[in-house]
Image (cartoon, rainbow over all chains, first blue to last red; front, side):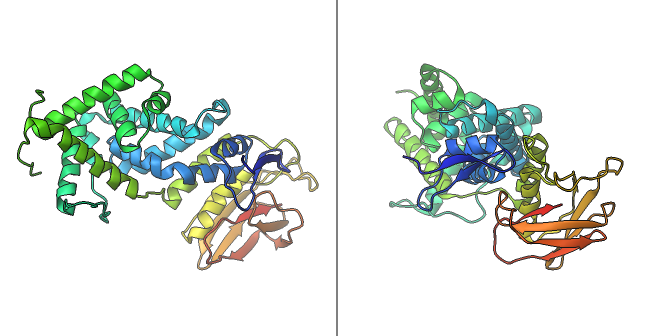
Amino acid sequence: MSAERVLPSDDGGGVVERSPDTDPTDEALVVAAADGDARAFQELIGRHESRVLRVLRLMGVAAQDREDVAQDVFIRIFRHLSGFHRGRPFQAWVYRIAVNSAHDYRTRQGRSALESGWEESAEPVSTASGPESEAELRDLRLQLTGAMAELTDRERAVFILREVEGLTTIEVARALGIARVTVRRHLNLARKRLRVALGGNDEP
Amino acid sequence: MRKKPLPGRKNKTKVLAGAVEALARHERARTESLSDSARSEIFRHVSQDAPAPRTGARLFTPWRQLALAGAAPVLLLVVMVGWLGPRGDRPTPEAMPAPDVQIAKVGDQVVFRIPNGTRVHFVSRSERPDRFEGVDAAKVVDGNYADRLHDEAGLVFYRID
């Protein structure tokens, strides 16, 4: 059970009352932010900014434009807070707006400028846990991200949400507003194309 | 980019699974955050859309306060212009033009200037946007006020009456 409650503030907006040992849920923050609690919206940004920036990067938004697009994402989120369906996962909604914003960006920019978004982090993150060397893992990642650039936006979004973000098929369907069968179809197509790109033809 | 030798058919699925796992692990280990300027820009935009106060009248809505507070603690030069409005218990003459507020970081101070404000204003400082009642207000004469920046990261909210 959540320990926070939304109280009216002295200016008429909602304020999230926080208990010392629990964090308010996203939903409580959404309610408060929609009522004018700036801190609640700031906290929502803090919770989701890394996720938004990651999705934008994986969707091919160029590094120099990523913050601008992320700003648009959060401004869109704020402007539609009052229309957010309470009881639905806020995170899925954030994913949807991020993916749509990335798609809009790609449409504006044209495909030629798209893939400058692929870059390795300046500070390498150690992810090797097995016998593979960092160099081998990095090589694999680069091959995969290069191959992902050839996917359609929808295939790419489904693949990122399912495989990188770790959402279930139902969660991806909810996030993108498409049917589960459509998620599975795009995921299979994406995997098939990526297998070909990584390993030659795709004959069984 | 150098590609690995083509794997056998049986290994293709394994190669993709390995690449996906490497990518997912790498991506989840990264933490990215928006810059302070991007954050301030978001709040500058949303402050124009924020719901209007239902009771009383404040010089800054909480959104405007946050747009300002997001800039102040990062010790960057910030110049923002806000509009002062009448506060319920301190009516402003209707004929007077809306004064503008200029805020800048100068050295280790936040300097407020209200060039066309009234002769006397009151500035309150709080760490919570909803907690200005009972806070000591500094009297500002002739439109200039400076507050020392503190080292701790965190938001500071100002209300100017």
